[in-house]
Structure formats: C-alpha cells, structure tokens
Length: 446
Ligand code: ADP
Ligand code: MG
Image 1: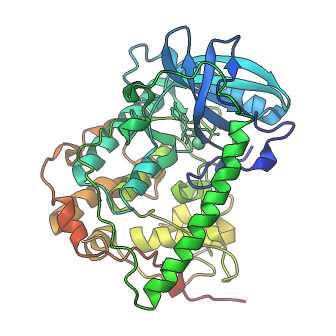
Image 2: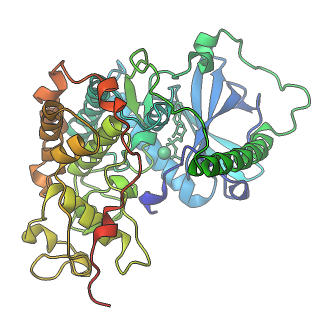
Image 3: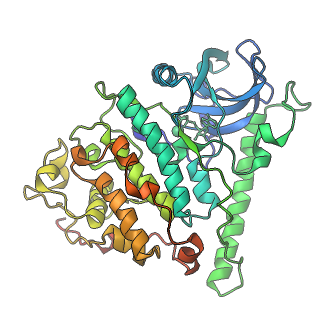
C-alpha cells in the first residue's frame, strides 16, 4: 500500500463516499464498543485508513482515543501491522515516557460495512498542524520550537535506536500535543460528565455532522471570497490577526500514527512519506533507513519556526514533474546534490543527466537557509545561523551523514536559551505568500 496517501488533512472531512462496505464504520455518539467497555463521545480526527473517536473507558473511568480502521482486507492487514508495531512500542516503554503514543487495547468490531479492527490509544490533544494554524502560520517562538523538537527527538531516538523502527510518515498531523490547546475541549478538564447513553433524536451524529460541516465550510468559503474581493478593492477588511499567546500552551507532544511504520530490516514500501516531508533518497529510489525520519524532522522544525512548509513542490503542466521540482527546491536551499548521490538511485535517470544536472530544470535560484530565514522570515542573524546549524546536517543529501536522533539531542541549539522574541520577528509583516521558486526556473527540452 502506498504510504504517501495516508495523510488526513486537518481541514477537509473524510468524505461520505468512504462510508460503505470495506470503508469507515459510521459511529454515533454513545455507541458501545468491546462489549460495552468503550463508549463513543465525539470524533477527534481521521486519516485515509481510519476515523478516530474520543471514547470513555468504563473500566478505568478515563478517556481514550478509539481508532477504528476501514474494513477492507488491505486496511485490516495494515491495522494488524500497526498493532504489532504499537505493541512493541508499548512493551518497551512501560513508564510511558518516550514521547510515543501508547496502545492500551485492541479488538474487532463488526458493523454494517464489515469487520473493523479497532485500536485503543491514550487520549492526546491537538496536532502540531492545529497548533501552527492556531498561531496563524506565523512561526512559533523558538523556545517552543526547541521544546517540541526535544519531544520528537526523544520519540525518534526510542523508535530508531531501541526498537529499530522507522516511522516513515512523520509530519505535523502525526505529532499530537499532550493536551488540547483550548482547555474547554479537554474532556478531563472541562468537568463535563461522560455521555453514557444516546442523546434523544440523535439519528447518526457521525454522518449528520459531516453534512453540517460541509454546509458550514461552503458558507465560510463564500464569506472568504467576499472579503478577499473587498480587500483587493481597498476596503477595510478584517483587522490583521496577530499571534496569540502561545507561551501559555503546553507543547509537550508525542508521535502517533504507526500505520506506515516499519522495522528497518523489513522495509514495506518503496514510496514512503508524505510529499513535503519526503527525503531525496526516497524520490530517487536509492534505498532508505532511519535517516528518512531525520529529514522529515528537519522539515517539521522549519515549519514550526516559520509557519511555512519547507518544500512545496508543484508539478504538472510546466514541463517537469513534482518529483523534479521537489529535487530542484531542495538544491536551491541546500546546494547542488553531489553527482554520485544524484545518479545512484533506481529513478535517477528520470531526473538527472550523467553529469548530475537536472534534465528539465536548469537555472536554479540558490537561496541558502540562513539567508532565507533572515530575508523572508526576519530572523536575527544569530537565530538564523544557530537554527541553520541545527537543521543543515539533518538535510544532508548523503543520508548516512545525517545525525541520529541521539546525536541531535546533544546539539547546543536545543539547550540554548536566548533568542529574538517572536513579536520582534513577526512585527514586520512577513508576506505569507508561497513564492513558488519553481516559477523562476527555465524549462529545457520539449
Ligand atoms: P491514520 O492512520 O488514518 O492517518 P492517525 O493515527 O493519524 O490515523 O489518526 C488520525 C487523526 O486522529 C490524527 O491526525 C489525530 O487528529 C487524531 N488522533 C489519532 N490518535 C489520537 C490520540 N491518541 N488522541 C487524540 N487524537 C488522536
Ligand atoms: Mg495520520
């Protein structure tokens, strides 16, 4: 199964079409699972393979996350694999201190769409993607970025060094805070009692809420269009949104979603990782190991600090593919890929000539990381150089040269205290337009 398709976007819903035989299980509030042990409370999220619900565990009187897999055989297979990975993760971490979500239980649930494997995980809060959005894509204060990075690295060090597991789909959606950003949404803190019986008149909350969400979204889009128009003709529009108080948010976090994880000695798929977080050796099909997670980690750290994804390749219609654009963007930021590495993959010939130059994208516009941080993101020179020194080794084209999570944990950047306050960086309004660097490229050939 292709791993790259496993990303549940935060914005869109999971779609009705997948509520059919072999697909998702439709859940209603107060539905019972595992002979009544777990009671569904509300939907927390979803992915290509599953929906995830907040559930009340009547045995322990606590809240858990219930991940209900689609029922078709390939999803069952994937869930069995995920359960085996999660079990070894839980077995090796009895004190639950390694920044990886803990599996509590698993069982089968039969519904109209088939038999679904269900995983019960400790309940966690919002994803880093939500945190980035909450902060209006402004970039978090560097002390917060540091704290988050430490947690991710503790998790990765555990997975890589102690268990031999590659996550292979590390991205902001798959890292969850310990608690919700909005405390009123935290079932433990909100003080509300759990829902144990079906609310009256509730026909099918899972699906009706989907309809409502769609209608709301349509309305939001219409409003957005109108205000965009107004802005462009010089109207007042909305006041610029400023960053909220991020300092009070507890940013301790854990790695989740082991649906694509594998043991390093038994790689599952050739194409792994979600596009923007994909390492160059995966694109080139040159083999991979733990260091693919380190690449994604660096992309995440950049995104946390700037609010922008590090690489957003675009393909199609411009004479080059998304893969080639991606490789070009990497080189524009990191310098030319050494010829030996560029030409070593099974897919290399699609992109590179024998000199190690891209075939279709010729004129690269180099913009080194520290300069980018200063010019576009208004970092101080000190912050930019320290942060680049932390990130660049992780983005080494030679995968074997990237530091391990364990080495990375020793890096001075993680332990330095001072940095330019966030307000200072963000005051000068940084244009949040994704400048497609690929626009500047010269096409060659046909
Ligand atoms: P998939 O493999 O289908 O992508 P994930 O494991 O990534 O499924 O879960 C999908 C979404 O559900 C996550 O992005 C997150 O929003 C939510 N979620 C997953 N696990 C938990 C958890 N333990 N606590 C709270 N929310 C969770
Ligand atoms: Mg996921």
